Length: 249
Ligand code: OAD
Image (cartoon, rainbow, N blue to C red; front, side):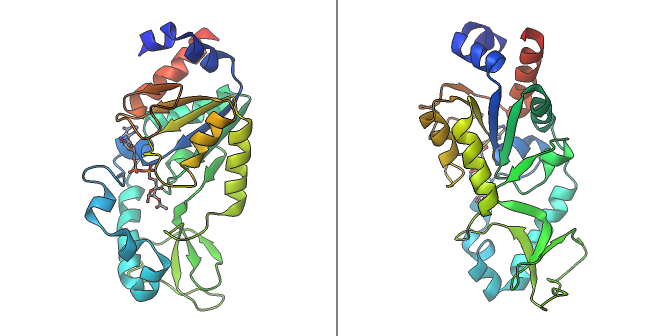
């Protein structure tokens, strides 16, 4: 790993000289915390059908089933702690002058690790919003056995996450593309890079001329196009990258 950092001049220069930096994370960043990913062997979408659990139609058809599945995931996530990858990214926020963190994850572990500004493209599982009027409610009760009702309009609460077929929050999407188009260095970490629009961000970064680094134990659809891939777990690679920057700047 350190050999890679020392031997590849472009990589070394990007890490040590560039100041405008964007990090995009996916489920893989939280894998070492114990949060299940989606598309790997044993992942959530191998065991459960997203059409029955992660669409507005599914909630209309069977709100109880969808609620119970999200309450189960909330229970799991509430036990999880950030791992060294999350902490290294929080440190990167302090190391780079202009830094944006964009995540597809809904688990809140980046903030738990100390990241101050997090663009959550797919919402946050630890919040509810009213299915009917859209009013957002911070805080959840893991003991709620069925979806509570909105105190405003009486509609049912649902988790404040983006389901298949739904629009992403437009302000988050705008900020994510803005920072990506103007960055010098872009990291794609722990994502299969298959779900758009998040998957468009590394491509956008390449088109804008940024140096693109991927961190993933497995090659992905973008591995052949990026400038450098670290093949390994983010919880091991990221702390080494941060140490390298601190030692060589
Ligand atoms: P995926 O499950 O599609 O991909 C997870 C990626 O993490 C894979 O490429 C793994 O190889 C990689 N990975 C596993 N362990 C890792 C580790 N220790 N370090 C680094 N990488 C590791 O998850 P996402 O790409 O996040 O959307 O999926 C994108 C979206 O699809 C999710 O946000 C979710 C899902 O449907 C919504 O729920 C809206």
